Image (tube, rainbow over all chains, first blue to last red; front, top):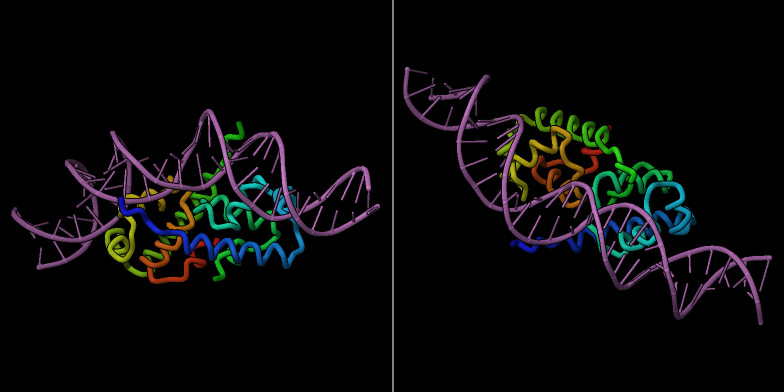
Length: 74
Length: 74
DNA sequence: AATTTTGCGGTCATATATTACCGCAATTCA
DNA sequence: TGAATTGCGGTAATATATGACCGCAAAATT
């Protein structure tokens, strides 16, 4: 049970991701083109809908051309 | 399709996790006591058996008393 | 030597991430 | 204004992470 609440965490991660993507001026599809992720999923991540896996964090870093650790700056 | 290979990533993450835990001189059960994770799962993570989620990375940081970003230093 | 701690492998149920799509409404661009 | 881009929600199938356990063999402690 323990319907764990990761919503806030996911929200913060998503906000940060969007901020970084916006700063780089990249579209969802552009990021997706640089890594092994679907653009609609990246959208879901930005909107706090997913508690993503380690490999996905790494892929996002690749897609954005940044250090994955920057995605945890929040 | 695309039997994605995250093994190397998981291995590196696990190694780093163990290194940090050893430096802190904490047992698996001690880390687990400080966060919401099962000690046997932490063992599995250290042995590269899991592609853990964002929330788990955060929990590990809590359990070890470190910045979660340190877990991605590899 | 007896007791405790530790790492770890295994299990089963449940939740959820991921893939690989589709299509739309709104925005941007030529 | 017509065409392309963009963000995003939805879906169905599949894979996998997690929680909560158990118990063991070896190491450490007393």
